[in-house]
Image 1 (cartoon, rainbow, N blue to C red):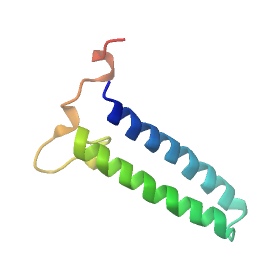
Image 2 (image 1 turned 60 degrees about the vertical axis):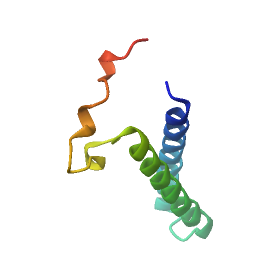
Image 3 (image 1 turned 180 degrees about the vertical axis):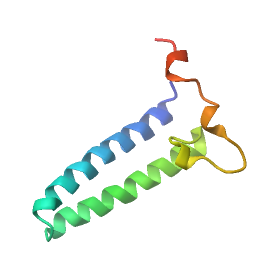
Image 4 (image 1 turned 90 degrees about the vertical axis):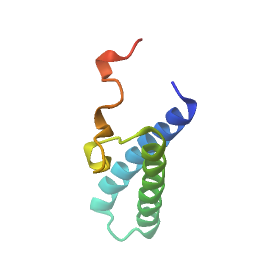
Length: 83
């Protein structure tokens, strides 16, 4: 698998984790400015990584698909991948 693709997916997965954990923490600590800043920073980092991934490798979700084509189905399906 492409190492740049793997790096971007790692950033996206890690950001997803931090965003979710921050959201849970902020439910009980809504005025914690450091947590709010971390949440915003991770949202921005994730968006940048998703944008870079989708530019290079195609959409991650149907929401990331461009309307000029339907690239969502261009990659192999999970069961088509070789182990």
